[in-house]
Image (cartoon, rainbow, N blue to C red; front, side, top):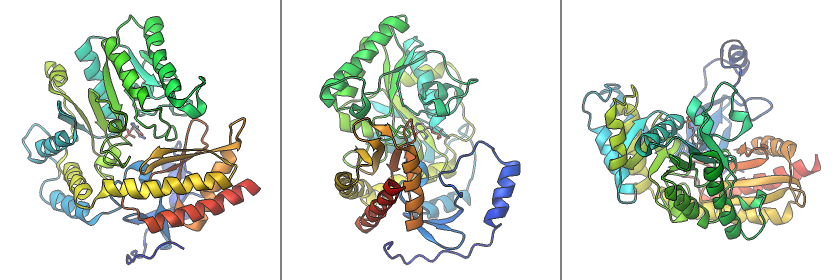
Length: 445
Ligand code: PMP
């Protein structure tokens, strides 16, 4: 049973599910994908819960793809956005508005010293595009190193950084990106301890620089914990060694914190802090706005000078309504102990997943930190053959029980559990029961 709530959803009066499906088929993007055999119609959200058109409640374990950081329609965020939209919806950064420097200043306070200049854009793809552009301008080099299995966005240059065939089009991309071996110990081509695998993987960067570039590079970009890739990450020494090799070759280091930022990993506010490194750029999106279209790049002031050679302008970047959401999110994280909750409740969830691993042979690997967790399903633990169909079956069975979960990984066999960070221990226990049941059904099929 889902834990109780006082929230009463409003009656839904919009078009029916079938009408929406028919309209979508005729008029909307034919490439949209849905996680379920029968697409789910979601019409309302309240904190960690979503509601369908019949008023049925679901525990949201995916947070609109790791975007709803502090809860659906969190009252503080709603109030501040409503006040702003009724006062000034749009002005562009050609005028002064207090929210722009205010949020930039608050983000600087969350960063290691020196990372104190922020540019605001609208999406994670744009943030990564901008970081790469700045890195190339600042270093004078062109080549960029990214990790295999990474997701950095869908715009033509961010698509070049992304390393999943599913997300690439033959028309897009950036020819000067080189993808190096992933340090994930579960599927590494190298053998040894996770630390040895990390060192061997980092050395590959040196090899790629030697063989495939003029010897100098503009940047190394990585998600501290891969999101779409399925919560994979290397041992703590990986990023330290990768950053050192990058800097040896003139490059700047970019931490893509689109999924890992804003307290999601629990122990720290930023994902990179779990690995003892300091990047030159931090790119962020998703959780920064709790669903408002807002993204940003924070860098050092000497690097930011690169953009003063030209005008960098973005019509909606720094939009007052999105900024109101961003400012409210930071306040809520602080006032409501959201990061601490991610640490404690995430720890309970991960321990529960590890217990399930002991009783379900389908679970090959449990990984991640805080409320950014992945469960890799395999048909056979020895061969690690991906269990794609079983993953879909688990998603369906969990939905039946009232829990919505995500999936990812190159082969689509990783359950992604990344709920709004206001989730409670009771919700986690419900989710674990639902997953236990779903895995039993999936193994039988
Ligand atoms: N980086 C990461 C790590 C992401 O997960 C995503 C989106 N899934 C992006 C960048 C791109 O963000 P957007 O979809 O807002 O362009």
